[in-house]
Amino acid sequence: MFRGVNKINLDAKGRMALPARYRDQIADCCENQLVVTIDTETRCLLLYPLPEWEIIEKKIESLPSFNPAARRIQRLLIGHATDLELDANGRFLLPQPLREYAQMDKKLVLLGQGRKFEIWSEDQWLAARDQYLAETDESSALPDDLQTLSL
Image 1 (cartoon, rainbow, N blue to C red):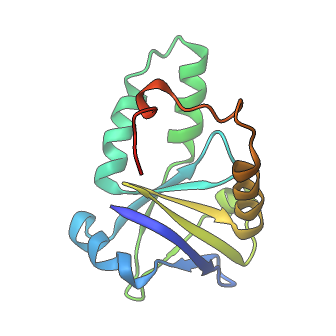
Image 2 (cartoon, rainbow, N blue to C red):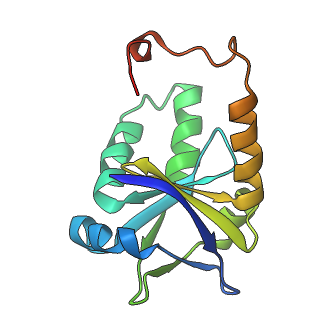
Image 3 (cartoon, rainbow, N blue to C red):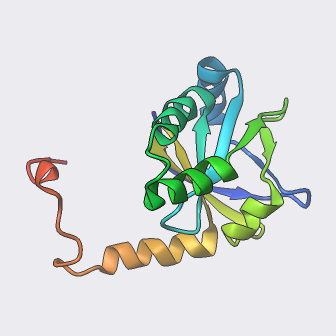
């Protein structure tokens, strides 16, 4: 499980280093094989260990191809999916088109989300986080299945 907020720097070549605390887990679960794609709701990237991505990809591929919304998701998520491999220093290259989509510059945030990570431009993340915290009660109502959750 991946959790936590990590500030990351993108180098001049477009590479970022995965924090050391995740590297052993990534090596064990997927032999340093990752997949990155876009998030279709916000301007961030989704980073999956390869086995987790393969599960998601099969679900996406099984969507009905004649459904316009399903085709949109297939085109965006699978179309932008890119295989990555951690190098000996725990770094990987974020493809330029994905960096442009997520409006990334030098400062990034890596956000653990359980079985995947989100990668944000630091400015985008701070703005989104502030918006999430400021949302009114009406717009942030919990789904019924979360009403009984205690933290």
